[in-house]
View 1 (cartoon, helix red, strand yellow):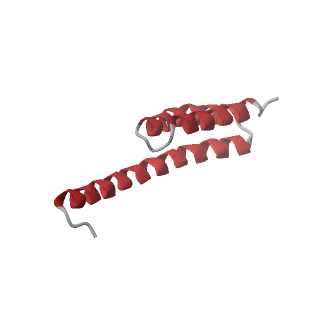
View 2 (cartoon, helix red, strand yellow):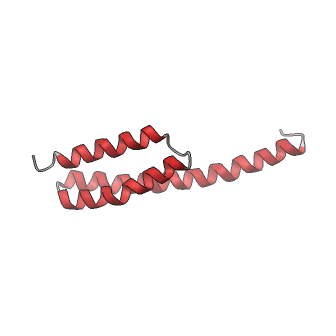
Length: 88
């Protein structure tokens, strides 16, 4: 248990930040799920639109430190390549 005032404040800050980050992570996962569903249905235009909406969310999460920048870029890249392969 935290004893010093600074440790107690740090605990409060961590709890707040964890709540915000989990909300952001959940939001990104929702966008990614929409892209996955569009890809699995085989609708290329819907998948492209979903990716267009998901990409800024992923990059925003990366900017806020929820995801690493390279992780977000990798996810976008892999989804884009899967969308590109739908019609081929």
